[in-house]
Length: 282
Image 1 (cartoon, one colour):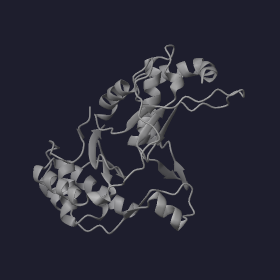
Image 2 (tube, one colour):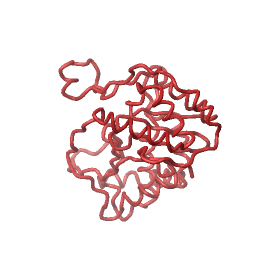
Image 3 (cartoon, rainbow, N blue to C red):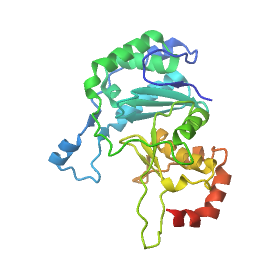
């Protein structure tokens, strides 16, 4: 499995690469990310649906990604977040360094960027302390999220989502996935037959994966619930991409990772056989 680091509180062992590679990567990054609160967005009347919570300058993100590539000596996937719980996280998967960073680092001073690169690539302890100090000094930039409408419910009558999440996180993400999971709310049955059924959903604002409670049945196998949850967790780990002017919620990388699920074919076959039963039970 890949290596993993959560919030930058302590240094973890990293690849033994020449420190000189990372030391040369410091340089200024201009102001490149702003967060617009719900209240402010309503006052500005942004002509976007829905109003975005975070605007990221793609050039600045790519600049930082290139620095990581030069130090890591391999492919890097960098995602910028507005997460107030996990500010810095990284893992390796199939030789790719996967990094998730709070947007505060996009306009950090050169010495902080240098320390960040050395921490992520080399596991440098002194660099880790500098990164942690920067996070503490800029805690005011962490988003204050609106409380959710209800508590998280992970233990169902048949399946325990938290247990499934932990197994998936360890097996497929090296423990680096910091998403939240919950069963969704049961909806009232309608006299009109359903034409669609959304078994899972993911909210990047809340970093929350919701699973439809119709899957919490004794006749629904655990591996199928795990597959649906795994798909939603991939949305958390792999950001949407833009292709041909459109936002791709399912980029090729996500589809490729989805097929790594050990019961991929079995899960699809079960869904085809039982979809009509799920519709009747929803």
